[in-house]
Length: 245
Image (cartoon, rainbow, N blue to C red):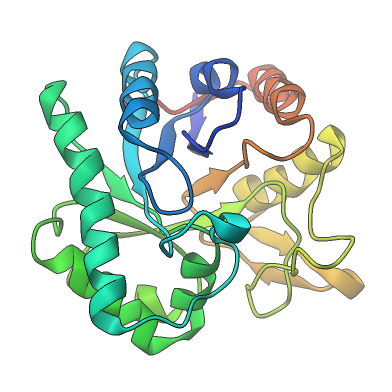
């Protein structure tokens, strides 16, 4: 039986975490940057443990304004300190529960900036280097951060089930109407093409090759529960199961 690895950004204040968690392989937990606090982190960690889901950190630019989806002009030291504080906060909670973090996935603008900005990518890697080199890094294909991380930290290429792509592997901006894919049938078609055929469909009927090993569905995408349950049902009919540790 084939398996597919699905991840979801959780602990961000959405009310659907408990319904999404049973159907995913890994969760990326907001750790105080764009969202999240000690209480929400612990709650999400316990939920992940209940459903045998991998636990990852989801650090972002500091500050809840714009939900971490806009770049910030802050110093290198300030950004590094913030990322390390976020990672440490979640790491301590996970450790107290007798578990380990498995991966790190930057959030929002930090994720996108690290894909194309060498300075931001290096700050993230420097933040990881002191204590977290044993973790995996979720990163987009064809990204600067994945290139810089090569040989230093294990990179897992990620693709998004509910987002449209540009031909350069970047995501269509959320300012555009077609940024999100919200129809469950369309999400499945998009995801299955990446998973089974290794292709990402872009605008103008262009296709690019995909080497993604994990696929993300955003918890705040409209109808996220309905979409995820539909995906699981479709994969079950194809004898494909959701990967679990």
